[in-house]
Length: 161
Image (cartoon, rainbow, N blue to C red; front, side, top):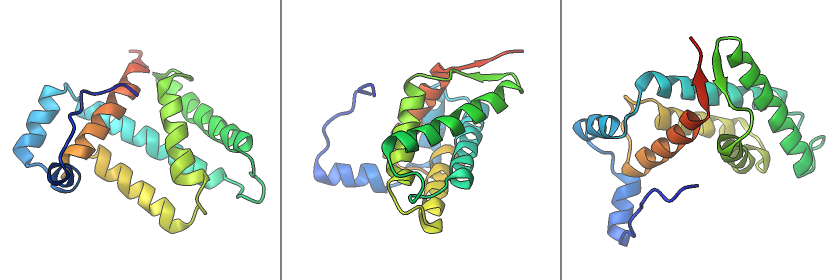
């Protein structure tokens, strides 16, 4: 991914960066300064949650899907389904691109190589909720992640009217 101009942080600063939520005023300022569209953020949240749900519901388990090629095949099938569903609503995401790679890596690390327990699935849902719902308090680290994902998805989205 692109280097977002991150500075090197001292341990104390890093701990604050990843643990201390920013104020509501700082959140509003961040939204404005990063040209974040709340409706798009909600769309991106729905997109990723729909993808996660489809992955979870159609995954046949590690006894059937054993190799990385099989995992990628399953992910691509789910990805294509979600992109196709959204096209019917005139919301067009590119089928391939850095957003596909980003989420393949995310779901590979957070879903496919774990035991896929309900607890793991709940953690993914909670992470996405905290990350994408603007009214939920966030740390600076989470804001940086949201910004990065927002840019990646926004660059691969066209909405036809």
